[in-house]
Length: 254
Image 1 (spheres, rainbow, N blue to C red):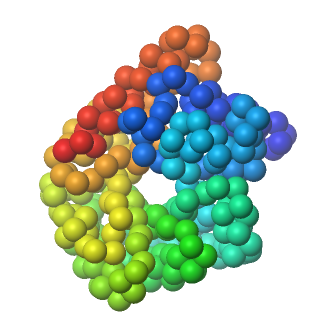
Image 2: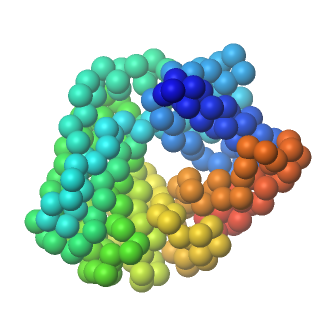
């Protein structure tokens, strides 16, 4: 059933977070699902455990999934009860949020709709005193990926320029075809960090691409957990996670 599945997922996430290889020396933040935020790790709320024990900044995924594709993109579904969720997140010790859209084609109408929606929701998050991670993911298999990146950078810069100078956001973007393509976003005064998603690339490929993009750091999930299995012994699990984190950390230092 659903409850059992969620409990097993939380068990695996707890195993990652409590590993000796997982700490704030190499990891800046971790993105939690709502179900993880509402559970405990070793007797503490998950977000408090991350910060108090591991010195890792906790973020919360707040989107409610994706709409069907239209105009070459998938915008976010409406997020019912967002403000109340944000209040709960603050009470739970959450620092910021993350929400994801997907871009599959270089359609200016669809792409503009994605960014407009992302910044509208980001403003609601900022108004609650949290830091939003804006994630307009470009599908790595898109035949117009490079064109999408050109349009996306332009539209994001336009929205950043409209933000109040007091507000800071983070951007989570697909690794670009052209190295250092997102430097203008990294250097923007309203941007706290630009992080890269692995997006289906293998960990090795994602690390190689990330290392060539100066100022970007990793926000990998699938690539991070590559090679981890429930059946591994504690030492095997910790060693595999250490190799993963070490490689991602080195790629993020450029």
